[in-house]
Image (cartoon, one colour):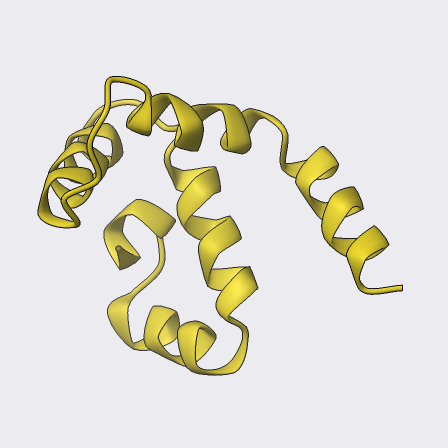
Length: 78
C-alpha cells in the first residue's frame, strides 16, 4: 500500500501506526494516479477479496472527494 500512497514503506508504516485515517487518505489519494498505482490498487483489491464491479470506483470517488471526506470526518469528531 505504501506504493499506492506514494511514500516509502518505513514512512507508511509509521503513518499507519500513528494515524490510520491519514494512511487511508494517502492510499485514497494515490488511487487517483494513473499507471502503476492503479495496477497496484487493482491487485490489492483482489488480495483483500473485495468483490464487486464498483470496488475500485469507490477508491476513485473517495480520491476525487478528499475535502468532502475530511468534512464528514471532522463533523463526526465534534
